[in-house]
Image 1 (cartoon, rainbow, N blue to C red):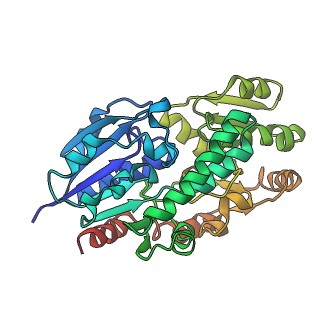
Image 2: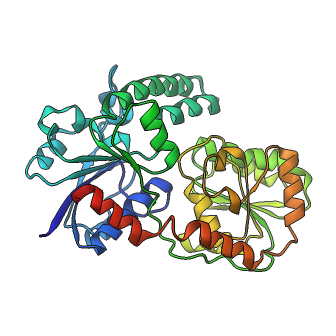
Image 3: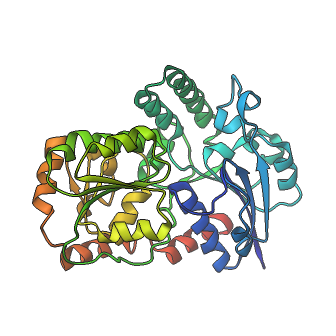
Length: 374
């Protein structure tokens, strides 16, 4: 009997060039390869319709977000209210297929009694109220600070309300535990992120620079890059590359002032992978602890040494494969130790042991299908 599944995505998941899109797209790819007929519903959020998705989905329907004042509510978080689309609900009611919602953003249907007896599954990308609370601390804009705090409050209330209305498929054990302890969710299981990486491609030997990479248009990543420039690499005689999408003029000017640093703006996918592969050290501090940092996984599957802080690695199985530093001085010390130190086979074998089984696509696809149809 053919299996059909509705997937609701908070964004167009292709190109798969950031964490959330990567998990969604490679889940779709894995399920399609296993014979599942995917009916994809996605909200356009500054990304255009993508014909590539038609190669993996039986049909793809796009919906416009209700942006600006139309999406605001005193009750619903903006990320949810702006995606409360009646057309989506009507399309979902045309059949009785299971529904997999990607992100708390896409859960408006859980407030509708017509879906009370429907098989619905939630794949939260992270604990959203904590993210917005942290963003309020990172931003320098008073308006953004108020917005993030307001959204954080609404998100905590909302996440608590809907957590018991769907089976939750958490992306990490940390998120699973939060849903159980804070939101009182009863049906929660962990399935790790679906990834494009099938094997460890890290190269032995010595690279020739340090690398920080990420979406530089995000406040968190820009803050991390600026911290590295000013607090870590300003006193080190090593080459430092910052690479990623949409760097601000502020970051560009800061890089120009650092003679040993350079900026690679908007690299292609292959250019980014080449940088990760060629770097001697991937230096990846995080400004807050979130569920999964896909850029760290990319570096571990494809790069040499990785230096992170506690926020990047806390409560993670990945910790043994990273060097952890807690202060700028500690980062400098570890960089100095590793900059000319060859990356060796035993470190590759450790990564294979830690990553290959946990992020096994076939195993995790089978587990996901058993949860939905078992």
